Each structure stands twice: as structure tokens, then as C-alpha cells.
Image: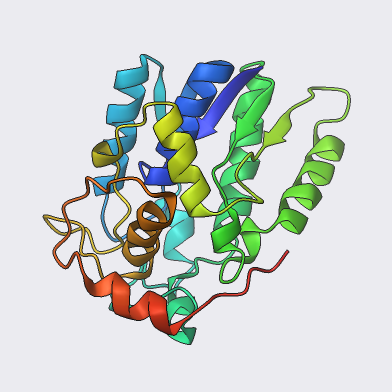
Amino acid sequence: MKIIVICSGGLDSVSLAHKVAAEHDLVGLLSFDYGQRHRKELDFAAACAARLNVPHQIIDISEIGRHLGGSALTDDIDVPDGHYAEESMKITVVPNRNAIMLAIAFGLAAAQKADAVATAVHGGDHFIYPDCRPAFIDAFQSMQNQALDGYANVTLYAPYVNISKADIVADGAKHDTPFAETWSCYKGGARQCGRCGTCVERREAFHLAGIDDPTDYEDPHFWVAVTGSFCAEEIK
């Protein structure tokens, strides 16, 4: 398949880009500036595209993001520390973000005659993000089948939707993903903080996968205490 990968520059989407490059025809990476509090992750997406020798497009939807207020990822709100299972992590939800991005990506894929759009949503995100769940993926595909009926056939490729982040680390290692060249942290400092939900999940995933984590964290040990206190029940 000719596939466009939505790439944030994080561990999941960069691993997906390397997987697609190895197993399919990667025609390009697509990133979004939705007004996130830092653009650091987009630099890592650009580096991934250069490494894989494919085009990289950044779509500016920051004006839309400006109206989706109330999230710690877009507003001047402190990013909470801790495990994704904590109630406080709901402040990191950007309403309908994946649906908006995917709708744009499908339009581009249809125009560029791509066969599929790939997204790196995964099982570990089911608990907190409704637009990362299998039911959303299935419903979005059905909607796009109607939206593009008679014009294009574009598949939503989400190979990680039913697996854990530890499984993604294992798959990324299989496809030689340079994990140190990915950015997960929500805070955008000089180093990844090691304390926000996505840093904790990242560090835990390497541990569970039995693979050395090359990430340089401000606090490399914080994850131990918080993962021992919580166990998020995935929503299937």
C-alpha cells in the first residue's frame, strides 16, 4: 500500500513510520501544528522524514486549536505529573483532535492517490482518549467510506490500536527505530521531563518490553512510584 503516516515526532508515530517504510510504500509524513504549547516534537517529525527520505508536510490548524481551549497541551495550564490513570490527566485531552486531523489527512490521501492513512493510536491510550479507541477507528473508517464514495478508497491503517506501548517499543526496535530521536514529553524543556503522563508511559513501556531506554530524562526514576500505584483499565 501507498501510505501517508500522521507523525507527531513521538515514539509511537516515528516507530509507525519506520514500520511502514519497511513493510509498505511510505509516500510521506504528515504533521499538524494545532497550537500545541511547544513545536519541539515537529522537529523530530521532520528529522524522521529526512531519515526515511520522504516528503514532510506540516498543516497549520492552530486557529482551530485556539478555539479548542481548556487543554494543558494548548493553553497556559500546567501539565500534570503522574500516571495516565489519574483523573488529573484528563486536562491533556484536546477535544476531537484525532478526528479533525484524520479528516484532513484523508482528504490529502485522496487527492494524492494514496491507499491509506496510518495513525499510531494504541491500546494504552484507550483509558483517557476516546478518539484512540477501536470503536472510533471503525466508525471513522465507515464515515470516510461514505465521504469519499465514488471518488477514492482510502484505508485507515491503525496497526497499534489493540496493543500496548511496550509492544510498540518492541516493534520499533524490530524496525530499527532510533528511539533517542523521538520526542514524547508534553512540557517541551531542554530534556524530556520524565514526570508527565506521556513520559511515565514511555519509560514504563521500555521497562515492560525489556529494551534499554536511551531517553535523557530530567527525572528518570519518577515513573517507578506512580506506575506502582495505578493500573489503567483499557476501554476496548
